[in-house]
Length: 185
Image 1 (spheres, rainbow, N blue to C red):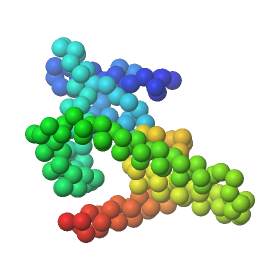
Image 2: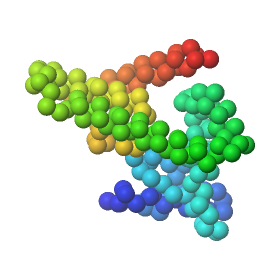
Image 3: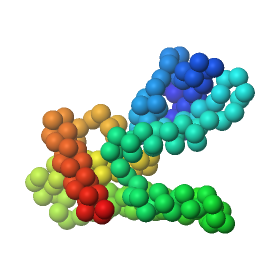
Image 4: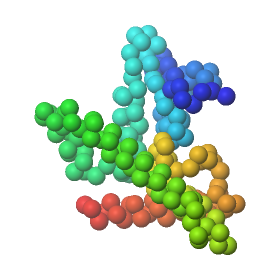
């Protein structure tokens, strides 16, 4: 088993194909996106020059998701990001974004921790299933950001629920997210 603390090394060949050095096979951007959703750090290196291309490929993954209608970034945030590249604020924006995502991860961890701590309701029948549903909901809402949700792999279903039930929840969440994004426009 590979060390998940160490970044997964992806090499880009001159043909622009991406090679996973752990599994010795070629991967796509969608594969890389899945590694990241599973909590894995990746590093993409140009084989010939040795240049680190990670940032470029991560931005490409985000752009592809946004172009498919999987909008996470509101237009005003995108405008602010573009402005930050042309103003003196560029030194503040990266730290602000990093701190914001860290607060989001910490907040979710605390919510999940509080759901499982010495809660008198935890011993009630059905509470474990409810907690598992809440965890699945939180994982679906955050899209599996690293450090968010439980330590269980995403392929597992909580408390014996069927995979279809989880897929239904994800579909409903996507519909709600779509409605919310239309309201914000």
